[in-house]
Image 1 (cartoon, rainbow, N blue to C red):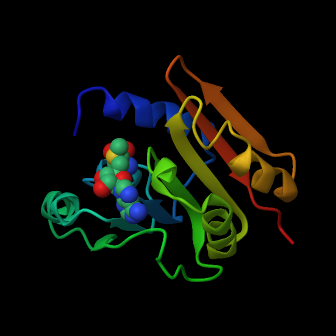
Image 2 (image 1 turned 180 degrees about the vertical axis):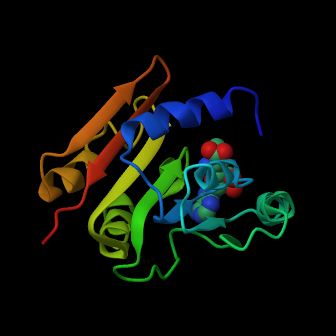
Length: 162
Ligand SMILES: C[S@@+](CC[C@H](N)C(=O)[O-])C[C@H]1O[C@@H](n2cnc3c(N)ncnc32)[C@H](O)[C@@H]1O
């Protein structure tokens, strides 16, 4: 894990509700650092996907046979996400690689259970504050949280219950 990353995750967890027993999807999960950190919050499972086989190899190695963590190589843009499956969908510094963000957001929305939450971190002036993601969130309702630092923006939104 990069130095300081763990602290960044703490800031992200501050934006989130209790995720004990949650099913989590980690898009562009890299070496799985966030996924592993989710275990300390008592989640039921994390599915992590990354396009880099090197990253996924490291994630699998560092998971140390922990059965709650499942890592696979995949292009998140082409990934067939299961419908109504996750309590939490997360992506840290991953969404700016996606060329069709509205379509990605629709698939993320479908994969979340009602009341599920989406959390993302991205660079300032990138997809999050361009409004593309916010637009989708605003359809869901008013439960939105953000934290802005000099270099990044973090956002949390909750899918409505109906
Ligand atoms: C800046 S890293 C962030 C990794 C991780 N989320 C973290 O915070 O440590 C960006 C990651 O996105 C992955 N990535 C880029 N394009 C992708 C795509 N189309 N599908 C899946 N992963 C992708 C890269 O391989 C890389 O691991």
